[in-house]
Image (cartoon, rainbow, N blue to C red; front, side):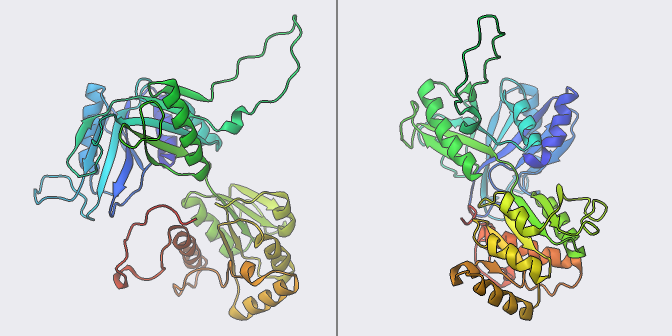
Length: 404
């Protein structure tokens, strides 16, 4: 839903009623994964996508019905059985889609969710999908009315206890802190159990279905709960303010990264040259990396093309938990770079993490083509792709969870 958050926030601000359709679970080959969303306004305007075009028409009609009745629906779309009028996934997959009015009754925490997305703050929403044992089998035929129940879950660190002095009797009392959760799934024990699971999924940036007992016990046949995580966008650090970096920054922003461009040369690191970057930093690259934490979702692209920048930067980068570390340069430059890094004390295991020369072999020439090659390698690494032409493989087209 992050990709349509701006549009639906504008609808909310204008008082426009709309329904929100969200993919909650998929089987086999589905075009879009859990969390993909489409919104339909009361005037018929549509934003977003749940299947890349396979079932949007059918979901649109369900959304219009949901707006008319005020009742959420859970729909399953599967392989077409030959009926030309039946909505089906031509890719052969099965997808469950939750369609609900975006109102206080069905999505009470939506305004805060949109605020936190805009502010880059994490939040998760848990929604009960089914309360019938065995009802959620994904056989491509079920159409249920959703039982309801929603829980907005904020990260535990937002509510860490900090000791404070008791206020004087005459001092104004501080405003009460907001609850770590908002709403309920139907009971305190259940809310507590789902909150813990939702926080774990939020920390991983994972959206999906969990099955749990009605009172929070670890059972698999009572309740099906959809947890949608809105974690802050992953970071992309681009070092070297060259023309290739501008194309990489544009591509990274397009793919949902929070992009930082860093270069020690102020004449090159200008906003005019990098209008798409979220942050533009004039600093020695290795010093920037020393001062800013890197997590397992961060990708690092070293495009400086200069040993005095590259080596101290990569020496530090290869010792971080970054998901991807790539460096631009010829094969001769790569061999020289490896020799310098070995002299700096890096192990062969650490050096093996370096993607250099950076990117996939696409025959790229221009900065834009090179950016596609770099981002293709990053995507392949995240999802376990081979980088091979699909026509030459027999692997599943759509992978499951990200490779960790």
